[in-house]
Image (cartoon, one colour):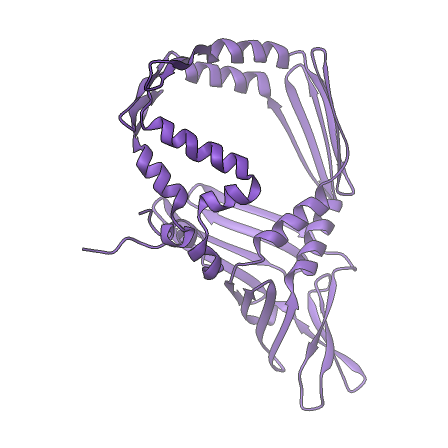
Length: 371
């Protein structure tokens, strides 16, 4: 059985408590998901797995050139051929060197126009902002998360096999400041809040509910008391943010006492994602394999130039140093591949793959018992 993926992968990287929908995980397998999306695809997948039990084949890689064949139990050749990957990519590099086009992101909409030899690829008015916001909302729809808050900053830290990771998402200074301290270096990125980034919420008190406002632009919580507005700096706040079933609950310790409020995360997240993507302008151009990109957000600019032809040439060089082979027989796929100085080894049975597809996801995420 696979190890607990959430604990071993997500938890070491982020200081989060994540609890997916257990009822869904305990009754749903990967094959169930495929079947829901396409019953024909599920049938095709299971029938071909059965055939692999009695199928023999081999795959040879020599200096990036791939050759192989598959033969069924009756001796019929199901698949046979060669693919010269370095030559293909070399020819692609020649095409890339003559390619041209533009990409723009304005007000959250993407427009592209790229010419590759005689082929023209066009995307017009793709609403990336709405697409991204809907995607994030879907991902959070069945997740429970807890994140500590100290002095107006959400803290995420962990020890990894490569070294410690310490990060913060600071919302107290009139901007969203993402700071990462990692074993690979430090990263800091800030997005300014605007006057529209204000979120009302209710605060329970002995006098009844009080309507307050989180003003991210000014960095304060504005609480109306006795006809006057009392400002609580976000930098003075500590507490915890929890998300359960798409409802976020913010518990705070403040100068005027504890405050707790709940809100639907989808509308809030939509506002943040949409406002972020609509506030960024991206202009990119491709000419003779050179990609030039300029991104602006407020008064900040990010500019980079990438030689795509050179990157493609590096990939070709890596493929020329790739050798190995795999064999399929008696329902077992085994072999190894040397990529430069790195060795990839595979040994997997068809039964293991079938079991993986039909086992409830919850069981896959549960650690094997210690014996």
